[in-house]
Amino acid sequence: MPTCYVCDCEITENNTYEEHIILNALGGKLVSPSIICATCAKNFDSIDTSLSNQLNFAGLFLDIKRDRGKNPNIKVKQDITGKEFLLKAGGKPFTVRPIIDNQQDGRIFIKAKDENEMRTVLNGLKRKNPWIQDIDIEGIINKANRGQEYLDQPFTINIQLDNTTFRAICKMITSFYMQNGGNRQNILHLLPYILGESQVNSVFHYYPDRTLTSTNDSFQILHQLFIQGNSTEKIIYGYVELFSTFKFLVIISDDYNGNDFYKAYSFDVINRVQIEPDINLNLCKDSILEIKESQQENINKFQEALNEFKFFIYQKQSEQHISDIVQESIDDLFTDIQESAIPSQDRVREDFTT
Ligand SMILES: [Zn+2]
Image 1: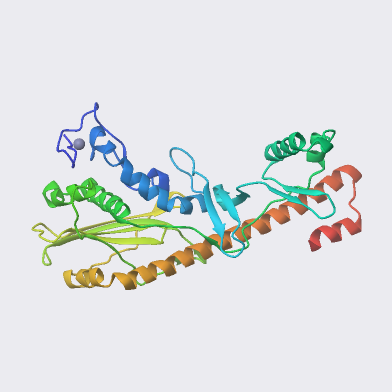
Image 2: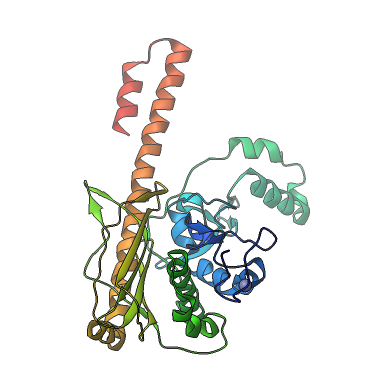
């Protein structure tokens, strides 16, 4: 009978819980029904939510599918203009509030995210201004310019990787260790920390010298987990990498008396498939201590990794923008062909020079 690694009760069909070892909210697919009971699972809701709130933007930008639920929209602020946008799946921006601009010549410029919002704004203007009682709202909406906006300016996302995040990371690697036949005695001391009852200094930022994995000219965005037990060094440690960008080292036990082992897991986040892991850290106790001592250096590397991630998103968005433009001009051309059988030369030239 499997037991819950938190409370040690037997897991039966009455209290089984499908634990997403890497959060569903982050697009994780690695699950286990036999490591945490349903009762204990509830105690982790707050740390899981905290972690997913911090990293949600990554899944949203990459338009990652989840097993359950959708990526929630997030708010970002452009660095230069200070304009606020809401981003939806794929990082498509829309304005948080409609823009209503009274122009000098008496005209009113309105920018809204969709027809419904435009209708609301026009109805509001009509109510407040008796002199435009007779405007034809649907007529205006029909004549309005439609367009898509892309984030062509840098934007800021606030990420706070705090103690709560670290506890969620610790739980993730502990679950991975236990799913792979780990011994509960080796993780008992971590439980009060994961549950927020005590403090341990076991989770660190860690950036091995490797950037976003690049194979066959295309980037891969990975979630990776790695654990190693080393009998000579008497240590078990784990490594967590999320979206190829957020990377942590966790000391699971520094008083280990078992056999050597290691286990790695790699997941291609965009294509949602498990891939052959290419990861073997093989760290000794001294290098782990060194990593623990050099957190500032690793935080700087975190900033670099984040910038790299932002650049990747930016490129992905630009590609999307280009394919949208191409699609639009093909659609236009196709409409012409349908209507007039042969597109005029001018039309063709115009479309392909867009
Ligand atoms: Zn339990």
